[in-house]
Image (cartoon, rainbow, N blue to C red; front, side, top):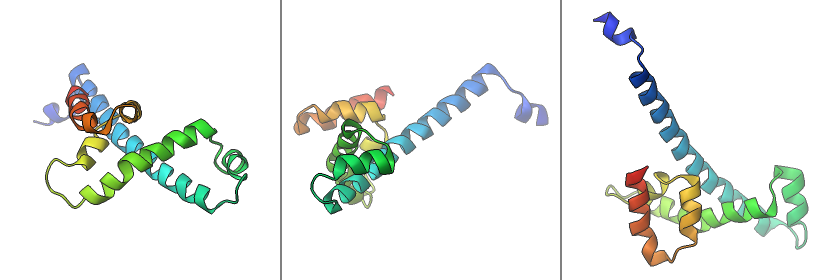
Length: 125
């Protein structure tokens, strides 16, 4: 029985890699949304004209990256907060099962089409 537990095969290793990749993907999208939340908060607190300087000196993000992260927060962050209390297949689970790139792509699609597209992307991933 102990041989079964210790035997390493390419199939076992592939399953481990895919599990880790999936976990990292979930952490990346959740972390990106939370960074966007904090960037938005900082931007609202800074005096006019200080945003670009603060980005460069404090967090080393380009304006474009910061804008994308804040867009992720604005679009998906409140859905994560509101739907975290729901037990059904919610916007929260749809968002956290998207990759960072998929979430950005969906921002360019009208909101009414996003849910069905995100379901498609989630099942393909």
